[in-house]
Length: 162
Image 1 (spheres, rainbow, N blue to C red):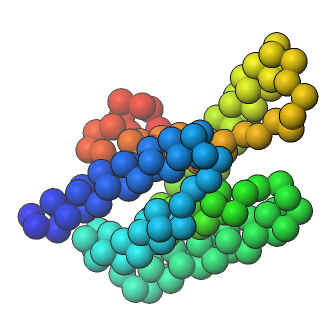
Image 2: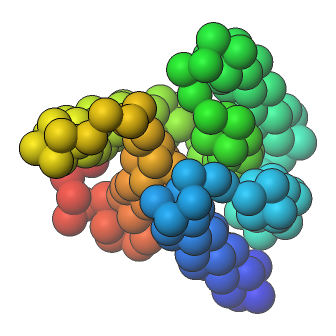
Image 3: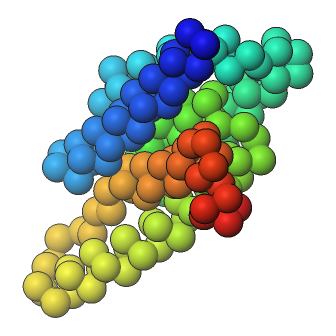
């Protein structure tokens, strides 16, 4: 019973952290390191509250997070992604089951595409000559919140149809 309270409390904290990441990325085009570190450091408590086994459960979570970080760090080196976005996605990989993490990436890409079209249109309409900066933390938060609501809230998956 206590584990359930901790489990859902951590999911609520993660949802709030994702919203904070989205809003700070909109406002400052930055996702703070303390926020990404907090998300990553809370993952082991979430694993315990979820009853995740060390092998293969925790090992798989860490492996996916390391793989995601390696791939995303390469994208950062090519200046395709921001550093805060890379760290946020890697920290989220510690929380989200591997198959659901793929779903997060798809929803994130769709949300990011819509965000890019909307901001690009606004940029053109206002004849802005500066470089277009997309707060991709918003798309990451949308993907994360989608997965949390679809797979971690009781009976939400049946409602959403996933």
